[in-house]
Image (cartoon, rainbow, N blue to C red):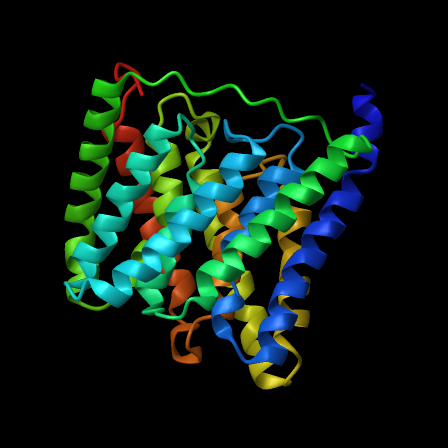
Length: 312
């Protein structure tokens, strides 16, 4: 396959990603249903469309099924498990670890899909329906891009998990996350541990992850994304009254330019970019600061506590 040609047409894949985010937010605006906005969709387009090599060991059926189940589980927890928020989040975290192991994949964006409705207190079934539809659109578009050689074909190779080590890994992740979450959840500053940051933490806890070699880049990228999303929403949407969908599209343009410049296609940065589009406006001024503190803390704890001696 002519990889030079693929790099030349990457601009089209960036455009598709921008249009996907714009369409999602536009439908949410005209329908008045905030639950339609799913920030992780930007992360999925980065990984499934824009990146030359998909960063997750998964296939299209797993993307569709796992995203749908994770989103549904998150809403079920909110509706039917009236327990403290930190326990709801830990339950979602443990559930995603279980199904990732069961399906032999490292498709960790489902963590954010599962935890986000808990953070937002979402009880509407519109959220999992929306996630399911968007996951379907993602995999259909990916199939078309592969068919017409807009991107390399994704070949699924299941993760070779050692079950014992996998259980130890997720137990340790859950324990560390639970400890880190005590103060933010107690003080109601939960976005120090925003869902995309939890995905970042899980990714960096993998000793084989290439992004562990560039922790400062990752922290900077997550902070930049949070600041860009907040700044553009405050200026364009709140101050000038422009549509949120337009604000989203412009935010994606800025992020994709930076990703292309840095040559780091880190999917959680796309999800953190769109979180400000669903936040209460009173949180927008402190959100980038929270993300910076959360990112640098989670990043270095993951690197220090999960070493290459552990088989994951």
